[in-house]
Image 1 (tube, protein in one colour):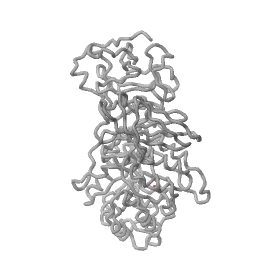
Image 2: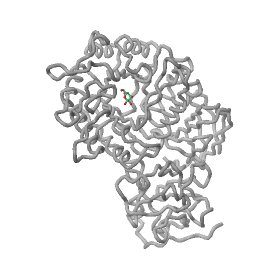
Image 3: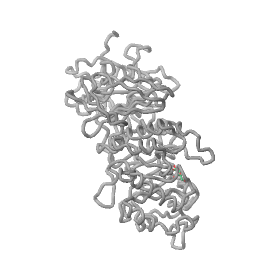
Image 4: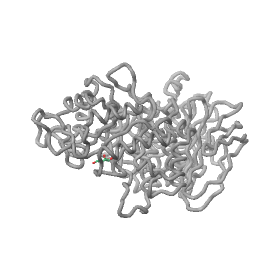
Length: 558
Ligand code: GAL
């Protein structure tokens, strides 16, 4: 047992210590709507043509897929928004500046399509771009290159006149005025888009692509974090990163599994931004489509549901595999995705083989998912205390099969290669769940308290899922590892120190998380900061809080 260290900062009152208690994810930005009805209180569901048809789209294909949503029963289960992606228009606007539908592709026009969808009980979504041109170089809504008037208000009114319910606003070819940064230009453009939609006279959900234009790698850079910070004020959901791999008809068997894992990879750390009216969008569900096995299809549905992601199919709905259709239509999984509390799940532990996620649910249940990255079937053993349910027994419903059992101490099971098991745990007779799991920071590395670099040392290390990365976030604002508290030490070094006697008001051990992901230590007001990736053995420190610094953003257990 290492000698206990004492933090060295002055004492605080209990009230002050508790004031900054580690709060749950900050309230999401108010959803904006034209009417009083808030939009997208749960993640949007539906279908979009892009990842299957790309520009090869027309009215018949949209209608066929809408019909298939209804005939498969998926529409009745909530997959109700049918969105026409890029390439629906002609290459120029008309004399009044209105967008012109390509009538060779959409002979009845867009108002007709909206009516058709609405008559089926579906909603109508359409694609546009906040820049001067869409990604496929059709007229965008934004200012022309070199500056000038945009068409945000005009296009929003045109969409409203077609009774559009959902606008996917992409971010290709956006003009950056002189003197503005790219990030400022996107913020202004998307604010204007949101305003135009609000003032259009019709409630339309806004899917904003802004963050995707700033993503570099899984942890991203400062600008990406800035955009993630404001995008929820403009959009109800947003694409933060790379596209899911599209279907290639010339090579239909090409695996798309690594794209699923890649998009899962960047989305899993962003839970703090999600909540009713605000959703991280890791892109389309391609479950049941060519390129994913049955197990991989289940995994995509499960991981997306754990992350409260939009459930937007992009496939030929009439050709979904039976296993894919079963996974997508699993009402327990849909209910998980659509849980009214809207809290995104977080990663408890991750390593080369397993990924364990937990998601707190509105009725007090906790969903647990175990992804098996390996290609072989594995036994799994998840002790309840590792997922925040120490002292509990729990009812455990397997969400794939619907069967339930009682669990004491450890959830066990088998998960096939590339598959994901999901259970809904209903805790019995125990205190509230304690957020437990990894604290993840810069470079998607884990805060690690292994004692290899000194007594009480906390460094960054590759995530392993091992106990020296298993933190708990207490209601008393502490962050604990193996019974010790993350504490402000001497010379701004952060270390693990005794917190067994919290009544003595140990200072420097209270942390609060802000929406930007910073963890602020209460006494100093400074931010927990990861060492540079090139110096992994260096300790975590407190430094002045900066503006969306990637080394000061953290993903916490929920
Ligand atoms: C991309 C977007 C895709 C699709 C495409 C259309 O930027 O991520 O989902 O909309 O543009 O050109």
